[in-house]
Length: 107
Length: 123
Image 1 (tube, chains in turn brown, cyan):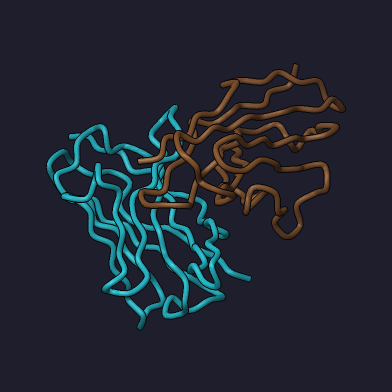
Image 2 (cartoon, rainbow over the protein chains, first blue to last red):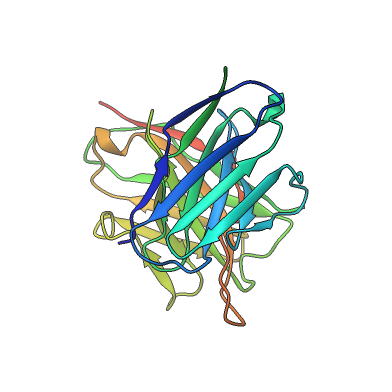
């Protein structure tokens, strides 16, 4: 099983500032990595697939990068609607696995 | 517009079977997509349960494999989850989701999710 590790667990950011979220895989997953945004009471929302491809309708301030085992989600100039929990997920091999999540909160 | 909606009992007794259904609209469950279940225990992260494509293409999380069954009802355009012998540890919000099938050398993540259904295991 591929273990996904996200850091930090919590990120305190002021509106308008940028944020960098990290995700590490225990073995190579090439670029088979997705990022999801999850708000309480809502369905998780796909932001990024293929490590760097924004899903339809996702604002350009969300950028994914990385390959192999190290990945990053960068959010430039956080808006109020961006405060949420962010999960990375590998879909390179079974079982599909998620990281533990990063809570981006208002500073 | 693709929509998924989970339904089922919100309370299940320990040792009994948890049963949930995911109704799909705007897309056929018979198409070349995988249909999956994911759960989130209170205060914890997301855990993948399993995916169904065809009867010969089903994948389950090894940690749950002995207790899980996912099936599809094409006549009702829905798919279901059954989890047997539940305990309090199975208390969670259960999500259903759609995943495009791998093809052309590339794979894809879940792209549409339901809103989730809270299932509590308690006597």
